[in-house]
Image (cartoon, helix red, strand yellow):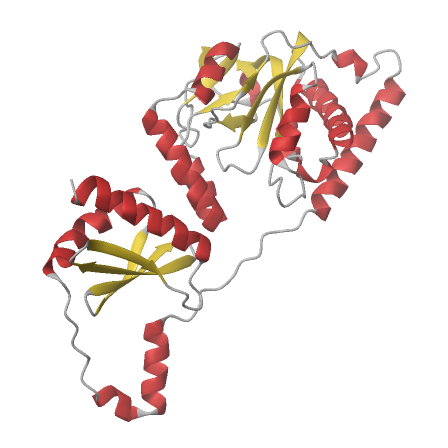
Length: 341
């Protein structure tokens, strides 16, 4: 059995026992509302890592340990039968995710493989032969197992080192390609911690800790970039350099009323997708929009004419091309599903 929680930020969040089969169905065939939420999170993850980490805390989660009373605290730990190898940021580590997924399916001890909520990692679940009731022993075993696993699959730079704690939680995700082997081979802890040779077992743990720590140090860290200068700031600077610019009357543009009538609904639906309109300026027969997510923005020109709406992605400096693609698809969906119908 595993245990499921709903609100990880809530103190004393109660846990519910679930089977591995139920976990598999929750990952591979969740309700449509949850699927949409995960897809939105993956959009955010590609644009703003900090915002993604905050939003991810709203997801339900599961723990491999059993806790009595059923609250995820060290003092409540009773036993653990399952454990997860957490592989993060595979692309950054130079690992092809789908190729790795296929290789993992060939390992007879693998019970479950699924994509992380962010979409750039894999979670690999294993089952122990016997329950482990010693949190410290489990932590030592995990480090040795993780090191051997990482060396076997050449993913040392992608392993999350924090998952050796029995209280560690794993957020639910959506992956229609989740791999499930209900007859997976069981992992024997004694194969990794030599019971009859304490000194050797302790040395194995130390070596594993060193290798994992070195890999963590070698990982590239995400760079924080400051905001780019926007058009308004540049305009004010130009006016101070040449005051005559401020005296020029603004250019008048014809904007079709159909477009202005649609804008409130467009703004509302974009917000549901974690996208916001940061700039909305009139242009001839249309509007220039800056659609933002996190630190990034995309410039889209939205027109309305005899043939209806037209969406044009611009090549403005600073406009994020990936976000522009997402924003254009979002606008197409909103216009087709909510405005034209």
